[in-house]
Every structure is written in structure tokens, then in C-alpha cells.
Image (cartoon, rainbow, N blue to C red):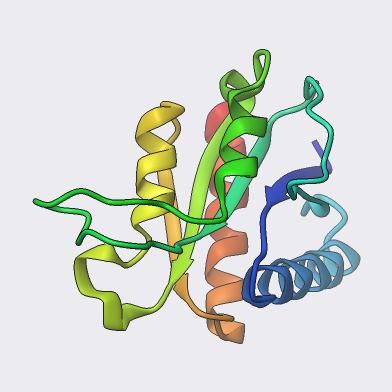
Length: 154
């Protein structure tokens, strides 16, 4: 397989920025070694029509919470519901090979909580995390993890 498919949702632009950097890094890696996969991005929003996916994908999701601490007094997730509904549609969840989360470490236990919950809900591994827009080291680390996971999945 020479391509990784990523479905993501981006509210503040941080996730979009990270996956665009990841896609650019993958293209560079692919030019160095054609065996390394490139990345296709699909942004999911409230306006995205639900459709059945046909290829395996990775989900990238930020954490936006409103109320509760996510541990002992509940949690209300905000704004990422359209990605969850998309993954839940048809057999899409069975094609989700893993979840990558982002957030703000200041939120302690809530850091990447949405991605961890997606992993549980869709029975997909929580593969990696990065803070806010991530760094170039995060991009390289996440790409390496996705490629390793891709080879394990087959």
C-alpha cells in the first residue's frame, strides 16, 4: 500500500495544520523512498455527507469539552460529533485502523480524551497524541507510528 488515508475534523485549525504538515512530510519521505506511503486527507465537518468508506483509514480528532472533568463527573463533548457520526456510519468503524488525538496538556486527564473515547467506541487503538499544532518531531513520530501500524494491520 502506498497511501495512508486520514479522516480528520478541525475546529480551531490546529488539526488541519498538523495533518497538512504530516501530508507534506509523507510526500518528502515517499520521494526519498517510494516504499514509504503518501497521505490522503479528508476533512469531515457538519456539512460532510455520510458515505461508506471502502479503504482503511486513521482518525485524527482534537478534544473540545464543555463541562465535567471526563473522569468522575461526566463529560460533554463539543464540536467533534460529525466525525464520530461519520465513523459510526455503515461499516466505517471496521475500517478505522487507529485514532490520533490532540489537545492541550493543561487539561491534564482530559488531554486527548475525545480520541481515547473514539478508540474505545470504535474498537480502534489510540495510537498517538500531540499538543495543539504539534512540532516537526511530532510529525515524524506520528508518521513512523502510522507506517508501523499499517504494516501490522496486513
